[in-house]
Length: 456
Image (tube, rainbow, N blue to C red; front, side):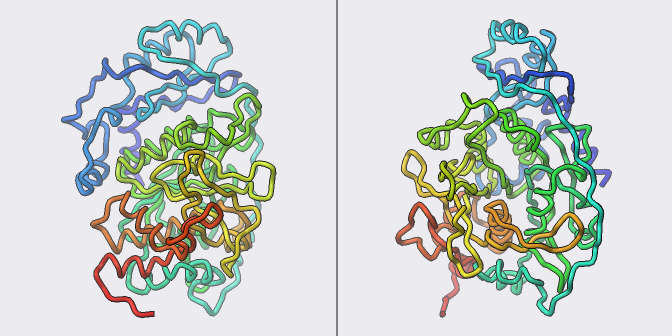
């Protein structure tokens, strides 16, 4: 673990992330910048701000390192900080700095700086903290099935055959960007998950294992590796656990945290990202999204998610759970280009009524595919398995399977993997805005890429 801590420390310096938590501040703003003209870094020396694995991932996929990879200019960050605000996170792909303060006139002063393009308030409120650890039972039931009760959610896309062929995610790194990973460090059945490191972008001082249980259950869908109890869809992959969601409120600033998280994930060299988060309404109704905003570019999260594929990362995200409500539509970043947006079905392949529908406002098919999200088998905070509903779980179930597919087809680029998953869906010839391209057959996809004849 020590070597990963040192790597994180080095990247903190290069990326200019202050990791500062300011519970007394009541305002947070996103400061968008015009350029990176004052950068101290060079495109010719990416090792100064990207890990070796991140650089190698780009080389393998023929992707150039460009100006979006350069960290936000430290000179600009320092000038903003000198105005009296606290710097929370920076985002190099979209070139912004997120700050907190108690005095909005400080933002007026920042807006006058020559390198500032615009400012936007992304949070107003009082910080609240109240999570406490759940008690553990740690007595999960054993099953005759190697996969435990989770066997149906991997068989649906025939990814169990990928496992049988030896592709269980080994060598693949997945970042899980979520709301917290309650008790992952204490649940016996999760002890053998290969966790490379954790990072909390909401509150760096918090215990990420004492926060929300949502990320813990999401992680279990992929990472569980206890035979006859539960095996997830990528049991031999390695994981980074990153927190961007603040469950105490719903504000745009969570997208700033998410942007910092995915850029961090890129910098340490992950291959895939799962995010079971989505946003369309906020505590400030003036910030609510409209259907026309679902174009893949309006929301910061969507822009960042789409950019990830340009860096060689496959992003898998939940479609949203608004299908039975008044909104009904997918939620950003599910509208992003070049991501796999996952809707939910039951174990018979029938649509879950809550699963959000597409299409995007610019006419792209969404969701992309579907997986089990109604009656999903997940780990509970007490250390026992339970059932859960939501595209929050269909997404990681799919993400783990895609990791295994990519392991089996290592020459593919991220964008080629995304397209392959779509083409393998049982509705690929006639995709719609409910099931998307349907239930993918990932074993068939694997055999197709590797030039083998398929006989059903």
